[in-house]
Length: 503
Image (cartoon, rainbow, N blue to C red; front, side):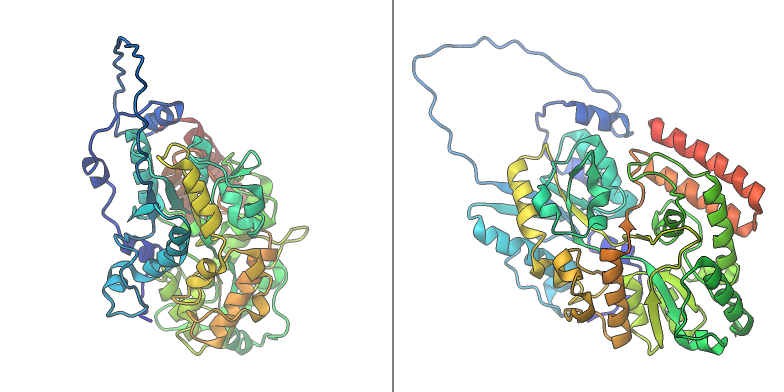
């Protein structure tokens, strides 16, 4: 297997990036029915400035001879996926010298595991499989497509899925199939009691601990932290003895603030959910400025300042922080299955535990790497799209493919997660330490009260930029309680504006 020292986000983007702006130019003009869904999307993009409707009166002609029945065209499903796959029948192998692997990475194998068995059961159906980037770029490509009326049969996504669910562009999948998955993995695709997609892969945050550094600080590895207070005490003890020339005295690490990515929030918001202080509801109703939110930020600052600003702003990737965790520079950090891939490159004596909880709090984690596959309501083949997702995503072969090849992700099926303690299809993770950590993330995904990021109905990139800006001021300024409250009041006002205004 070829290891790539880049983030999971860049893995996905690297599989196929340059579709967005060329999407409209590549498609011939077509007549579409303007619906309320498309009109709503048009208002939220800068791509379409005007909409005009031309009405024509056509005189109907009555004839005694019935028109011949048209022969139905073969069904071609337009599938938006994590990589372009022009030909599913071309050989793909997990080999860096294989031409399909070079173009498609492990997503080429995943696509074949998902789609080929299904197509064999549905003769006459073919697929056009194309990639449309990830994160905010995927969101923009989806909005452009909807505004132009060029609508695929299925699409994919992570933190922005609920926005499209609320726009009403997806069809729901059946409750019986949904129940096959861990609840947290489909909450981000849920609205008004219905579920609008199924996870091809998933992940869950847990707390990584370097046991060698832990013991050097005189801490007992049989007594790992269960409460916030115990965690802060341990971090301060490690900070006193854990020093490097480049980074100074360090212990805790998580992604530092900056930009408009939701990646930082994925590694922070579990603390707030534990303390009944969510940033917003699952469907994006903001609640950023509660007293418990202030309390949680104060706790988070204590964790962050057990390390230096230099460390926090330097190690901004799974592979970078994984290497520093192996070295002991980072002793404790939130991490998910992808972090175990980079941790697996070292011989670190490490483990992972569910996140410690505050007084009166509850277990919580954020789903991460949770890739939802959704059927579109206005695609050319809506019934087939539902059938494809319901019949192909829940198969064990498809669910186990990534963890058994590249690592990084874990299955979302309950039937697999329930046997996490003995699950052996983890060949993508190269050491026993990595496999053991991954099994802990699997159990946490099933039993650790997992949940998605809030599904803001619009302006997601601007919202995450505002969140990161507040995070930066609270952390870098080492703000006290009253100043944090003022900062969060401003953030709350900004979020309320973003979710109610178009732009």
